[in-house]
Length: 141
Image 1 (cartoon, rainbow, N blue to C red):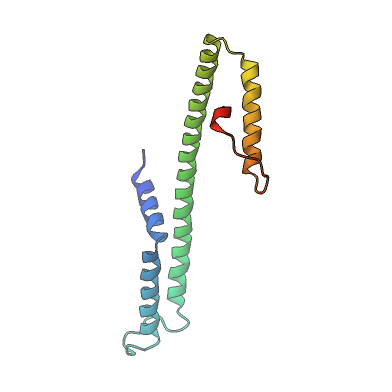
Image 2 (tube, one colour):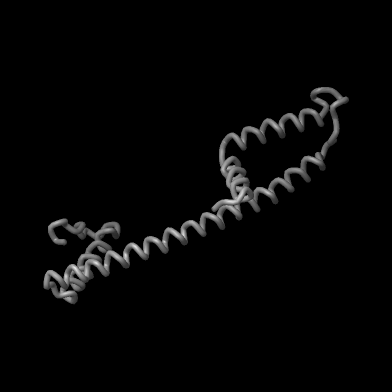
């Protein structure tokens, strides 16, 4: 389902988020500055201080990198929406099956729902720091 553009954007974003990216740029900037400060001889100077060409290149790189990051984030958000839809569908199926099984066993759905609400409330209370409420015991289910 991914286009070549999507794969390219993902690859660039994946590399830009690594220390390798940082190291490559640190070496690149060090060499660029050393060449243009005449540390390696005056013949190699092509972008004298204040490094206008380097500034432009870095600005353009920042623009493109931010665009690649946004493209990847949009794709990630789309994948998360699909996962959320599948989770919802799975949960809904499970609930419908549970109700039908409960009816077949002769259980009262309202009574079970009250029990579920109590367990949910106890679980939420137990997750609050310093609440002192014990977690839900498995035999209480």
